[in-house]
Image 1 (cartoon, rainbow, N blue to C red):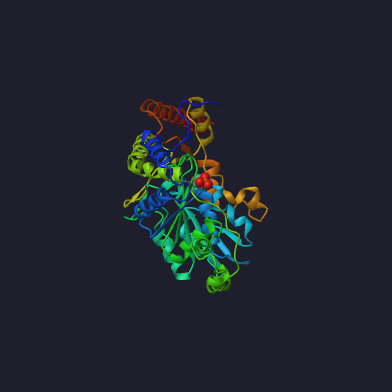
Image 2 (image 1 turned 90 degrees about the vertical axis):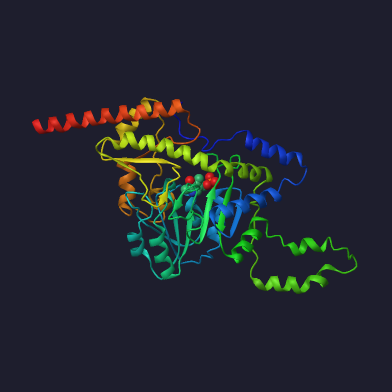
Length: 411
Ligand SMILES: *Cc1c(COP(=O)(O)O)cnc(C)c1O
């Protein structure tokens, strides 16, 4: 089915500026992997976020995988996670022998509820995995206070939150590790796939660097280039090799390096971030205005002091949600319901999770919330159509509800 107003296939505008950046890099005849463009993109990104390190990788999922590896999880450890997110947030945990405790969400924001979080902490809690749902910053002051008190590491999945702000600071610098995605649908894209980790610890930077580049040691590379062919390499470097062997068991490593072309495009995209987020907010404001004028609706409005990047436009209805979705689809507006509560997916049910574990997340997804198209690729005409379709559908829904309650009263 094709829609007059589709959900984002691209969440950002890819235009001449991105093409020019890639063309320039291609004409330079330098490396296409792990070069200057990657360094530049990472420096700019770190500055933007306000973190000491920004390290790019091939996707948001890989960023989360590497972040979770930094936790050194051991059997029996517990991780507290939000169920209201895309599956990639928690997927890497499926390979670890750990207990996941799902933390219900605050019904206003759909972010992890700090009040519930407090009740889930045990002495085995090693980490908290949260998302800034739709770009609405989570209650980080409360969450970090709890985490610091118990020595728990917090990973923020910032896949929606590039362009958001929380009390003057940016996601990616609100917890211990930030993970970003530059997938085609996200707020910026590195030509389809890409991701970033942000954090402040130097030892983590070293570990991520080794891990994302096959655990290759600079030291082994240099021995081929040092111009002293008669000295056997192991004689010269044995002390270092011995030292490294003592550091611990070597791991497999992987190649998760972002290509130069992707990094060049990422830099060009960052220049456009503010205007693209402004466009999202402009569309969201128009939707808020019309939806807020109907009874029985609730908006996804951020508190004063925070900025909502509107990666997803979310709102809530008291009843008739599914009829509303059908009506909007009939009028050519593509609606999505993000996200199905993760604890109810087969992989987590198989691990013992059940309905009732996160009542707010369940109630919201099954009866109340919905997501409308809201991205800079929409034309003014499409936005007008979207706003009209929403008004029409909500009026129909309201009329239906009034007549139903009227007939019930009569009966
Ligand atoms: C998109 C997304 C991811 C995964 O990012 P990819 O770059 O697609 O691997 C993770 N978490 C959330 C919340 C996302 O929206």
